[in-house]
Image 1 (cartoon, rainbow, N blue to C red):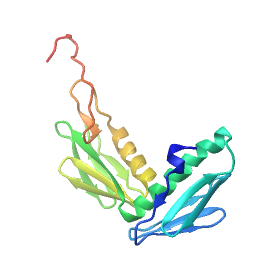
Image 2 (cartoon, rainbow, N blue to C red; image 1 turned 180 degrees about the horizontal axis):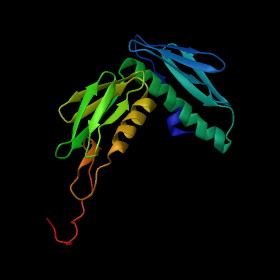
Image 3 (cartoon, rainbow, N blue to C red; image 1 turned 30 degrees about the vertical axis):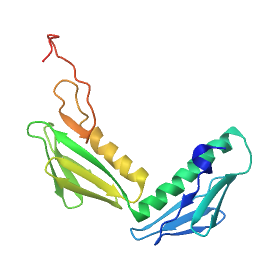
Length: 179
């Protein structure tokens, strides 16, 4: 069995899980998330524990087993605690500001970039650090990746938008000497 798929999911207090034939819905204090149930995967709930089992040992079904368990666990964590990613802006004159629901980024282009923040995502700005948070892990990661893609960090001076704690491999430059 899948190591990820066979581990049970403990439901914290304040979170409710409803399982139908084709949809799994998780509701908590931060909101509600739904995910379609995958084919050949059986999800069952007993008391405060959700278990995921599979119909057979076909390779595609085994792959779906761990995926379904991870998706349900992410929904449970999202509606109870939420997810967040932090991005950092480095560079002379690089700025970020919130304009209504959009982000206005000045990152070295001739014009400011407006990034519309999707519904369900909250963006906080503290100086040069952007915090992207929400209840859907996939959506939080996607928004953070799209913001980072506006101006990826470059290897010579390290300027750009990067994740907090991300290590950028630096190059020495044109002359080849170490700085």
